[in-house]
Image (tube, rainbow, N blue to C red; front, side, top):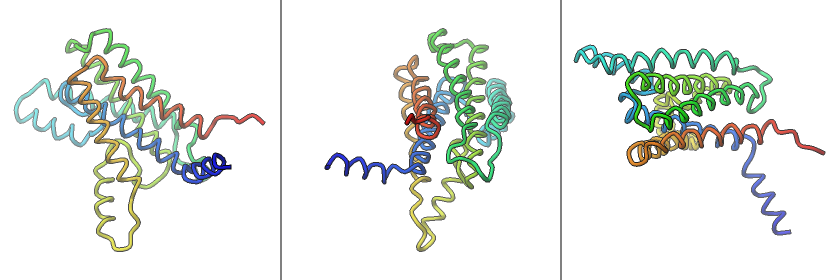
Length: 237
C-alpha cells in the first residue's frame, strides 16, 4: 500500500508538463557545455550566442585580429546552417501539437549525431586540433546548437529558449518585480542549467579536455531518450 501511494505521489508530481520542462532544462546544460568548450578550446568564440559573436567580430575588426574574425564568421555561418536544418526537420508549431512533437525528437537526434561526430573527431586529434580541424569542430558544434534552437521553437511557447537566454533572464527579473506574479520556476531552472552546463564543460575542458565532449553528449542523449520514452514509446497492453 505504501509503495502504491509513493508511486501515485511521484506520478502526480512528475506530470507530462514537468517532464517536458525537465528535459528542456537539460538542453540548456548542452548549450552551456558546448559554449564553454568553444570559448576555451575552439578559438574563444561562442557557438550559440550569435549577438556575442557579432560583438567579437566588431572587436576583431577594431584590433585587426584575423583569427577571432574567422572563428566568429565560421561559428555564425554554420549556426545559421544548423538553424535552417533544425527548422526543416522540426517544422513549425501547430495548433494540435503533441506536448513533445515527434519532429522535435527527430531534430534533436540530428543534433546528437553532430555532437557524436564532434566527440569522435575530438578524440581522434587528442583534444588538440590543428587550426583547420578547429574550424571543422567549431562548425559541428555551431550546427548542433543551431538545430537545437530551431527545434525548441517548435514547442510554440512564447519566451522558451535553450540557447539565447538574455530574454529569459529579463523576463525572470521582470516577473520578480510584478506583485502577485507566480514564481517562474522553469525560467530559473533553465538559467541554472546553462550555468551548470558551462561549469561542467569548462571544468572538463581545462582539467580533462579529452573527456569534455562527454558532458553535452551525455546530456543530449538523456533528452533524446527521455523524450522518446516519455512521449512516444508505445506501451503494450
